[in-house]
Image: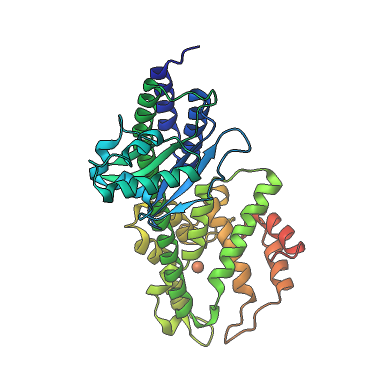
Length: 388
Ligand SMILES: [Fe+2]
């Protein structure tokens, strides 16, 4: 049955729009070619920009005669690559493809300069290695993105004109699609890089607070770890699905919960004795100072809730607003438990820290008073499992 190449091209183009993974896309294209043109095998040599070389990415066809993918890596000096990147040789290609049989004629043609004939001769040798009868290049702007290498047709006949036209059109679409897919991937990587930079900046800011408060060394990291454990426990226990965004906000909020302490005088923060009421008030101001520091960053809107309300109490006796029960954002309620537990175990100049066990009992005692009962419950279970 005759193949409607126009339709095949349209189908391939649709797939290319949908698939953003270059590797997957190439596999699909090679499979289409092997099935539709009925060649014994096909492969794509694809440019690896970072390593400045061309790799046989995918190779498909009936078992036994395919060249294994990743088997070959060619640098730009490879004769086959040079064939497709030498401008003077583009005129010897028929309809945008290079045929082994044409190459054989050319190396005998004395009108072609000897230097070019040598490149052709060596290219044929490379095509022999891949058992290929034709190569179809794909370019983006002026650079060679890849070469489609085709084996013999299964029925032993030569490739027909319209098959070649189909392949050349496909190769040009593939070049564009690969280019798009790579741009998409670059963009994704750029986003990941930016995100990592943001997290690292957050960690650096948190470390600045830790360094300022002499008695709480490592406190922020421990609180962050406990918060993440609590949320994992809540998920497992109540099958509540917290979104990835929530987890991320909790992670950042727990790192930054005491950021406002940057604005509290060290003399008060590190005072070697009990605090006066006035000093206590100044320290309590760290929640709102934190809000002011982070307010300009609009992406931190939810994180700010954690910073602002991590000293609220379930019974409404906390600060800065005296919120009660479920009015306290869950993010802040989780930080409150983790923060209080770790703070209780720390030594202060005027008092020794509680043992882990005593701190744990205090948290349980405060369930429904200072802390949200559901979070205390999750925390107790984690403690008994030795995860805290
Ligand atoms: Fe705090």
